[in-house]
Image 1: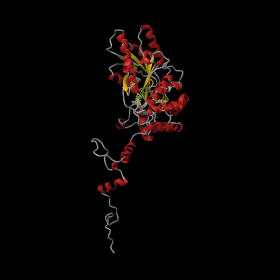
Image 2: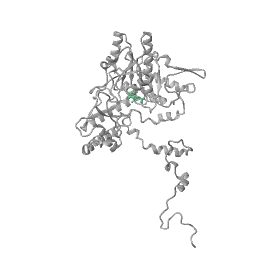
Image 3: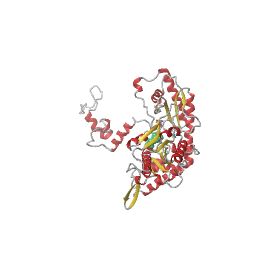
Image 4: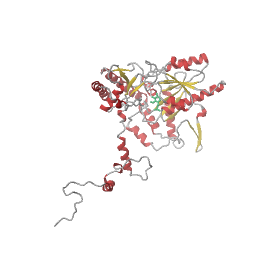
Length: 476
Ligand SMILES: Cc1ncc(COP(=O)(O)O)c(C=O)c1O
């Protein structure tokens, strides 16, 4: 008997017929995902949604185009935490931390962190501070406090409050200029020098006058990981107070260094042990070892925070004080910071910092041994756990070529950048050596850098069109 089945699925020659778009769509619910055939939602707000699995798949598929955080050796920001810390984070994701009345224990733990940081930074007594989104928010708040205090001093002395200025070096993070622009303060920026990448008292002195709201000094610059001469600047400001009656406060931007110096260089004085240091910011998400979204501002004394910058509200009959630029926010990263303080303590943080520093020295030796580079910073320098280096000169390629070749050959993200004005001719590469870059990976990276140089020596520098695509910022 002839078969009743029609040959719809196969052509007579036995070659399988492709499904039509319509047929594929019919099978989608069983086997596939909408996003496999359609462009992602964009531009027009989607008229209808998709299933939860489809939405998850859509995002996961696109995310592979981002870099791998652990290969990003440019970033100061934490890319790994212990599973228990991640548990703390995931268990607190639903909390809106600003609601202190509803979440009083979170508020208490925030205050514990502030008290412990004040102790770490050698505050002379009980003080206050703020938890922020990062150092940028902390710096905005700290610098606003400087401006408010200056205005009060000027008013008391019957002087003009028209032209505030703030002094800092070219080695600061861009947020300092941002503050000046947003809050109408004249930036007095001390340029770097061709062979000096931080600033000291002699650089600051010529810029100070009665309109100076403060001086900002960096502990651990983004560019080379060194510190400004904070002690020297403090001594200058103390002398100025005695000689000219000008009381100019010092703010220390310890975004990176605030969690490094207390453990690696405890005898080095940069914090509240110095008389003119009135406020300090630090990023919890850098060497505080927490994922992004946490920073801190700590004042020397309660009176360093001007009362009229604090907002009081009545919430359910309780008086609540806030000093932030943002309002609603989570408490996960704050709790993760507390987890680290409790988990590591001084000894644990010291262990982590010493390990990173040791690995940074090992990597520096490897990079030096390849014969193409010089290391910026001596073995005994006080420096963040990183390796900053530049070519010795005379090669047919430059640092940007090396960064690009290294990314092409091994996927490492190592930044190359030029220094700020008057050292802009200096090109630097920099590797952050964190907990995710242990002994085996530092050795691999050292030989990968040497290999990238050999490739470039053979094939020559990048083509002009490739050069245009090389990232030129420091990484954050
Ligand atoms: C010295 C310094 N200050 C401020 C910042 C800004 O910090 P955040 O990214 O925590 O806002 C950075 C970031 O790299 C920095 O290195």
